[in-house]
Image (cartoon, rainbow, N blue to C red):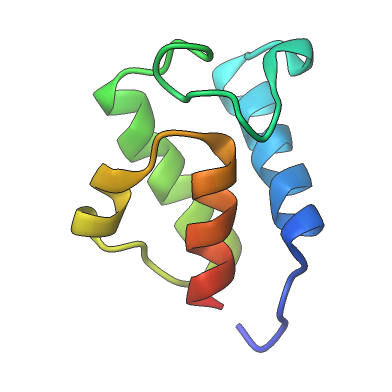
Length: 83
């Protein structure tokens, strides 16, 4: 992928994926929302999310880095740093 997305564009896409694919209410989403405690994702959901984000970016977040991700903002930062 040649395009560099802004953090806002990445956040918006992430929210769209969470709402459409995981049926998470948009009102629960904020940059500080924890994927596991606030949004109730489990480890399988996290893997599915990583796959969806890979399709969006054509880049893969390393498993080591993904283990460190807790909040939506962590996801945005990881993807932004990849691009």
